[in-house]
Length: 119
Image (cartoon, rainbow, N blue to C red):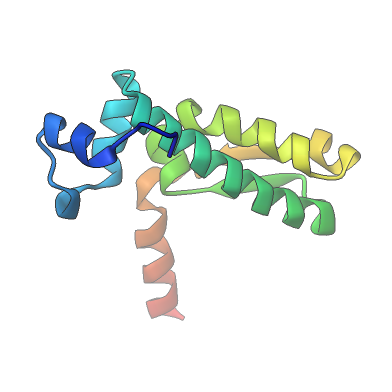
């Protein structure tokens, strides 16, 4: 969190108590241009991009498919994430890999749970 930014103040002004904060609240705030929420998504993309870049550098996949935050936030999150993956991965692997949202959208977790039960 950038110096001077008080997430508690921002949340209080938004009418969201900290214990009730959900990703949907941050996403709505980011789409409205809230600096704290935008910074949160940028920071999350940075660290997630760094981790994915490590996996991409080792495994060299053609595609990385992400659910949850990637499907909910879409390009607001995916664009910076892709930039960080390219920046941190081994050059050829980073240029080659496609980072995409899961085709099942937010139902991905539901289908994964059903697949475990069926197995």
